[in-house]
Image (cartoon, rainbow, N blue to C red; front, side):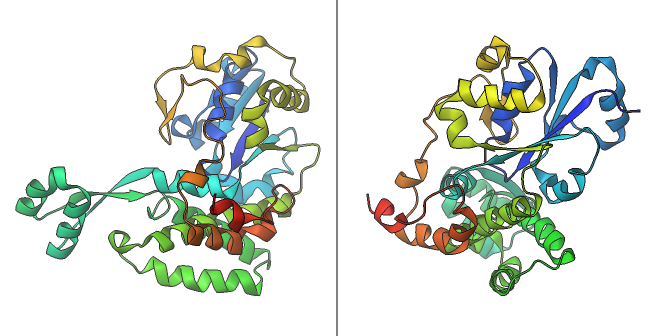
Length: 305
């Protein structure tokens, strides 16, 4: 029988799920579980053992496609993290992932051009090489999230003609070697990932069991937003939530520095990273889904700044 209150932290990856989990884990009444520490076969223990009492958070953006069903679970609280898609995609493209694969001469040479310091060793060995790809093009990254969200939407018969067109383009990209992904390909995949996640949020609609945490509000006015989150969870305020960087160390999943204090330095990083064409692609795919939270009326003007 469930005793500890489960709190699911989810949403699109690169939207502040790790930061929020670190903040809440700093509260003496909350035990935070990162996705790397979560094991499905220990779920009963998480929900009943005193060491996880009275609240336990699960940072699991990879199960956001299950939220419509999880909303109906008695006692659960859901925190959906939302962030401007331009910054989300910027973060996806900057986060590199190692992909080990058998590479022929052409692929090895191409990889070597991207990694000149390791070129000679790779050319000599001509076997499995660690290929650096962005999280957007990594098969188990954004592409995996697209697959799960699309399947959930298809099951609910919520795939529009527009989404079907994007899905057809994605199917073509799936056959492409990640080494040969262009910047346009990576931006498209990142934008589609964000869009499909947003479609899942639109299905859920926030209620008494679900709260949308907007990343920009969290980092610009953390005390006000954390107060609101704790009120939603029915947990009293504790000063430790403003000191998460003093209570945690090491690097979390997604290369987040656990000891970094809350600041607004990650806000609007897209302006210095995305091209005008990148922004146009994101606008085309994401703008309609983002209109309730962000103003996309002047994307092209902002990109030119």
